[in-house]
Image (cartoon, rainbow over all chains, first blue to last red):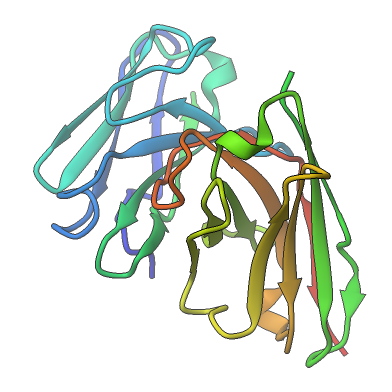
Length: 110
Length: 122
């Protein structure tokens, strides 16, 4: 059981908006920035959202992030076929003194 | 370009030891924290360990604390993970990861290696 909670799956047709939620607690999301990772099949993870809502260089503008209290979300506007991947949220946990990940959300483009 | 190349993954018996290495290039190694993250085949990501830019601070997941030791060699630009008393549940791809900042207490990992597979089985 992961410390951060994500839905196991999400889907949409090309061009639609998909949102992935990530729920935590006061010792992790409530106290520290949230980062999001995209993992394409057979590849290493890639940082797609940093410090809640900052897009790293090279990440398309259709990706956006937000955080409120002990929850965060990643949105993909204008879903494209190449966005089909697993997405993970992560945060530092002050109580555990370590990093924690969500269980991952598989995004499918219908 | 940032490049992280892991090595040392192997098939080992339960209770044995293994040392993973990660050669870093393309950035000032001394300026950033480094991390290990693992992923069991077909499963999600799990943070394993972190080390600050100057080796002054380290952190470990509860599942590996007391068995694994993270270290870095600034002269060679290498990150290491010494794994002792290995268990079948340690079977996973182990990723060497560059931190976004010098602090070890962050989940912002901006570059990842391709991973090295550790299989613990008799």
